[in-house]
View 1 (cartoon, rainbow, N blue to C red):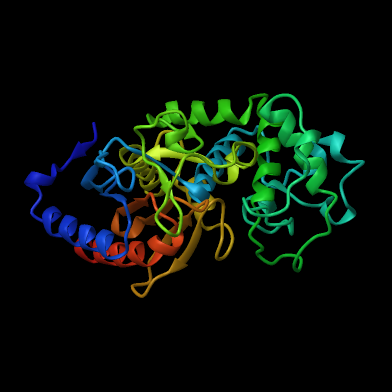
View 2 (view 1 turned 90 degrees about the horizontal axis):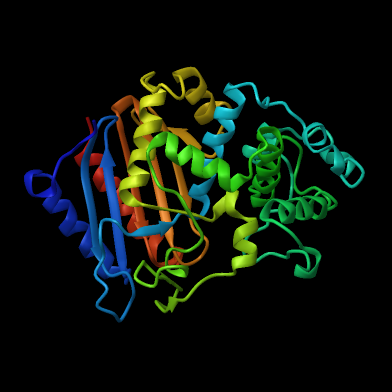
Amino acid sequence: MLMVCLSALNAKAQPQRAFADSLRQAYHIPGLAYAVVSPDTVLELQSIGFRKNRSDLAARVSDEFHLGSNSKSVTGCIATMLVSKGILRWDSRVVEVLPELRGSIRREYRSVTLLDLLTHRSRLPRCGIGDRFPRRSLFHGSDSEKRLTFGRWILQHAPAGHRGRIRFSNGGYIIAALMLERASQRSFEQLVQEFGLSVGIHIGFGYPNTSDSTQPYGHDERGHPLSSGDAFRESLLSAAGNLRMSTPDFAKFLQFQLRGLCGRSPLMDSTTCGYMHYCRSVYSVGWEWHIDARHRRVSDHLGSAGSFCSRAILIPESGRAIVIFTNASPDASVEAIDLLARRLQWVYAE
């Protein structure tokens, strides 16, 4: 059973909460939540501020936040588990798994593998929320069928950047999701729910307030609350950046990975988990990583689709992980998140 150090009993927690709230107010962030965990213990869990600007909806620990690109770490975990079961290979090529795309794929993409897609080495276009997408009239059927239509469209575009170099691409994660679906005979949505059940967490799709008006609202760069996003594009981008989680559930997700990296997870051994985090330089499977000043490997990722912001940090050699969420745009959030992350790493250093 995982243990939680309640804030009232944790002498370290109250000063950090006060510091976090000072940042929240200074940077005009409506709501901010964060957690610090070890493999077995929640060392601190806080939620401060408001779910919506100019309202009395006070923040709750159970609030859900849009993950943005931190969704990629969930997709990466699902892919890693399928590969470990022999359902796919890291070197499985798009044209092997999705042979119906062979006739529409450009020559430059014929050798692209699952690992290339998940580590941003595919050279596919970026495909952010604000980028060009195909006409909606082309899309019919289920979410999986729409992803396949998108796959045909994007694989006809000229590659960007140089072969072997990192070029961030949400489009690559959409193609990877298609490969996971085809190999497992499960929709991506089913795969996410099954993964959540296996880890003991709830993972939702889309913005929190879309189906529940009492959940946090995202806010634009001027602090205006947004009712919802572009549901069509977001559903296509689920594997790349359209999942949501509460702070306690994301904390459990980080604990799952800490235990995997230290060889204590029944679902993912340390070699498999280490490959997911560090198999390629700078950006591996769903995670950026670097060596810090203390010569430790640090997995780190920032996520935002424009009106929420999230950051996740794992330092397995110290047995610590941090998640920070805001319901504000990156313009308001990134500097505050960075300052809070530094403080929490210093305070909770092993």
